[in-house]
Image (cartoon, rainbow, N blue to C red; front, side):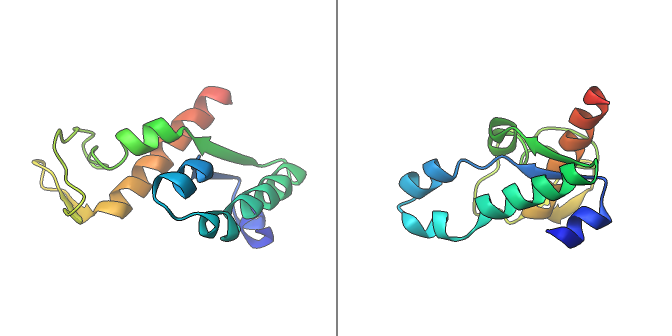
Length: 117
C-alpha cells in the first residue's frame, strides 16, 4: 500500500459489500479473511498522510453499470450475460469484460474527483 500511495495522487476502488458477498455467495469467512478491508484502510491512511485521495466508487454504479457500458463510446449494452467474457460494442470496441469494467470504475472515479476538486 505504501508503494501505491507514493506512486499515485488518487486511487479509485469499487466500494465492495464484503458482508453481502460473504453471505450471498456462500463464501463465508473466506471473504473477510482475504484482507481487502484492511488493505483499503491502510491504503486510505497512507494516501491521506500524503495529501492524496482514495476514491470509492459506489457499489450500485459498479454492480449495475460498470460491465455494461462501453469504455470507449459510453453506450450501454442492455443484455450482457455473465458467460460473455469479452465485451463487444457496436462501435467496434473489444475488450476483456473485467478490464472494461475497471476502465469504467476509473472513469467514474475521475468524475467524482473532478466534482470534489
